[in-house]
Length: 236
Image 1 (spheres, one colour):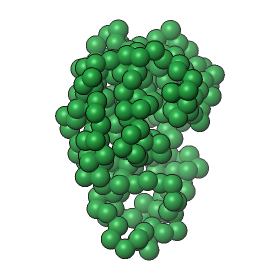
Image 2 (image 1 turned 135 degrees about the vertical axis):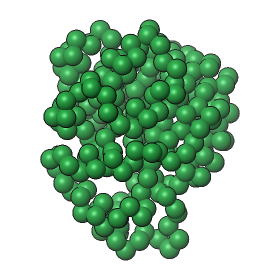
Image 3 (image 1 turned 90 degrees about the vertical axis):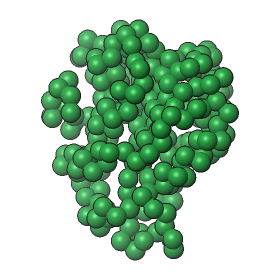
């Protein structure tokens, strides 16, 4: 773990398994340099956006549907980063209609622990995201999923916690989906190495959802859940 944040700050700003850990695992592969422009899609409360700005010196658009831009602006202002990070409250599904960004706006895109909510279709990446990333731009996506597919429906131990919109799939499933993109050249698609630690740090905090998730993870017992990480490059 980097030393940019105190444990208290991380705990206060997590919204699920530690997104900062998951971002650290993939961001070193993006060849980020000061002055680059990065879209932190589904940034939550901005931990990953702050990390990108402070660690790599990049300019960040911190976009999220659930967190008000004013709230994230306050967090960025407290770190002296409001001129470097631009908060944006927007649904990714509105990108083609509202067109907040010109084509080829970003040198890189990162999405941690959210892509499964909106991107589990073969056409999504090319229609919604590829147009706003520069040719040769880098992409890092980390998505929760399954170590192995369910063979006979949701296992009994997970059934009390399962929701139909969860969209959890295996590494192979995501790899096959992303391979259908006309613009995304995958360099890596494999299981994340820090899944267990990311979950442990989330479950150890006192967020109401973390407390709720403790029962699920105890029942799961390390048998089913993982994270898939994907690193790629835009080829268009």
